[in-house]
Amino acid sequence: MLVAGIALRAQAPPSVTVIRAGRLLDPDAGRILTNQIIVVEGTRIRDVGPNAAIPAGAQVVDLSNLTVMPGLVDAHNHLALTYKPEPESNIYYYTYVAESTALRAIQAASNGIQMLASGFTIVRDMGNNGNYADTALRQAIEQGWIPGPTIVNSGIIIGGMGGQFFPTPEMAKDHNIVYPEYLDADTPDEIVKAVRQNVLFGARVIKICVDCKPYGYTADEIRLVIREAAKVGMRVEGHVQTVNGARNAIEAGIWSIAHSTGLNDEMHKLMAQRSIWRAGTDTPDNLAGHPVSPQAYQRTVASLKNAYENKVPLTFSTDADYYVAGKTRGEVCLEFLKTWKDAGIPNADILRAITINGYKVSETEKTRGPIKAGFAADLIAVPGNPLEDVDALRRVQFVMKDGEVFKRDGVMTPAAFFHGGPVNGWRIR
Ligand SMILES: [Zn+2]
Image (cartoon, rainbow, N blue to C red; front, top):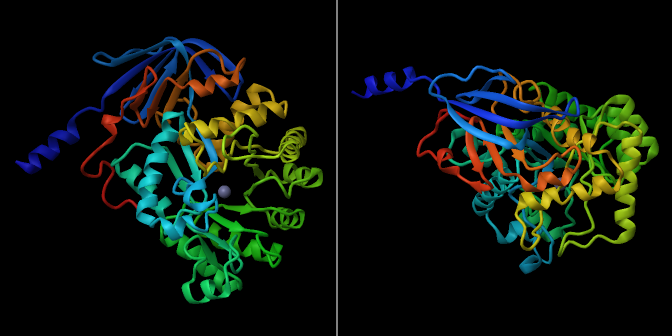
């Protein structure tokens, strides 16, 4: 009986959904096509075009009043972390004293759902996630227990002693309070071991502190990280906050640089020459409870503008790991559009950064992202034309992830995403 049941399910044809797109945005070309038909079979896109054949028995989703487009990417977030004024004074040292990794993993699940509801179908989750809550989130989504974006996670951030923390000697030595937010790796042996630990515990990208401390990594030490990560096909992102750190990271040939404080005109020119991704985490000045001084905001905007003018490969990246009253995590991330607009970047290029470049920096661009036959069926729909008004992205009405409808008519409909058992196997690592 049981065996027969399994055989029957295996033979059942995958469900077919047809989307009628009034407008279809191709961010690569920066243009809109009208009256397109997207045929989705199971988890993948089977056909796209004005005359795509509609298979008999297909479920039809009418989005003829909306603009359908590929899903969004936040290239830098921390889903299992929330800075908050109470009780932590917005200091994340205290988050992992006060909150277990288990609790943070549940919060990450919630944040992932909030991101997906705002149209983010891919998130690079770049550390500060307790003891691998980021891996747990990725696995839970991949097993089909909960809805969420595709997670490209870094595991624990690797850095020289202390990471981004400044613990007291007692707390550092007796309680190892730096771990699990950072893996101390000061010598070549420790660097190799730290990379391997992250690989073992489910990272998909490696994140290092290049210059969180005055004894930050040299170009040679960064090369060692890159070599060790490359053995398993992984890229390396560097947290960079000084010009010297940026110079070392660029010289070593790092994949992506997070934050903009170390990036001046010279560094941007070098990054453009070497095709190094910029995950600038360009914070706007209008987030309640997260004040940014006018001077700091001007620097952020000027840096992003300079990067754009120098043709640095840009990703939309937020580092939005704090609570803004009244907003979901996804809505906070979309507030960052303000910085991009204030930097004078054309809408078409903002849209490329938040889609195409996001797939590239996440290394999904051959399987997931573009709305093309054979790709994973991830797509969203918004009213209006984002090429004319990029703030249309704040009004995501429809989200499909892996061929399942997650949001329709502006309302989350996630039932199809919850399973008691794994839909993609127990062996997900
Ligand atoms: Zn960050």
